Image 1 (spheres, rainbow, N blue to C red):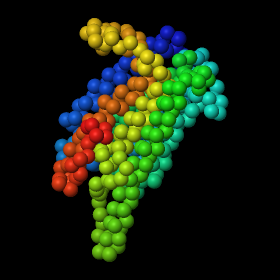
Image 2: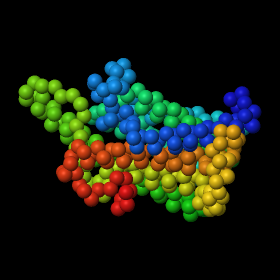
Image 3: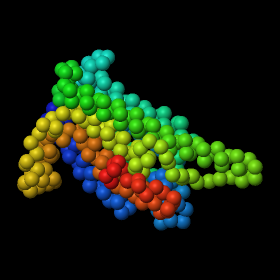
Image 4: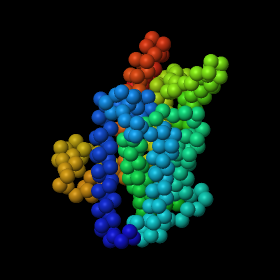
Length: 321
């Protein structure tokens, strides 16, 4: 498969697993100090990093960068590199089919439905979609390889309570993510409608995005409920897809040698936390990359709206932070 031996495929998989986790897991916290250049943080004209040919359309770039994940997932899953090219059977209602369907449904909404329904989206610096394409290529490939491997859930997973708990969490998170995104989309629709009415009256044109304070549901408690719900979604997915980390003994993590052995560039990639499978890597990397963005976005809200912004709102975890 792919012209590589089984050992070469395993080495490639372990290497991708390790360096995907480290590169995005460690780079994510940098955005505590440097804003990711998209949305409200896209460089404006006259700023150091602004150049017209580096600023791309928000909706088109979003579709392109997000569609990469399901495409690479499907390609890798269909080729089943760790099952001799014989991908597992997808039968209606079996655990593996539910997981594959859940992943594809998320990206059907994220890559196609949501961007096509949004009335507008801020432009982005090319570096943001480029980084997202790299992220989605690796993530989709790793998940496709894992779910088509012998480690993927068998039909017997249907008798495991953690599978159904995980799928329930996934469903709650998915619905919550969609609903809270819809609140933001409605703000844009209302702003666009008002702007259109004003322009029709005075003949003016309006540029730039409109930002307002969102209200409703979890927005009562946190600034980024869509992020929180997405974390719940992928936590549930990870629990359903691979429950092994739930019963693991983590006492070895208290030893410095465990970390040096796992993180050292000289150590074989297979030594990098063997139980950290792609579903859990996805969750870890999302937390590492999205939390700093939520923090910066929350600070932006406070600066933008001042005393009008609800003081009781936390950043991304209800009642906590």
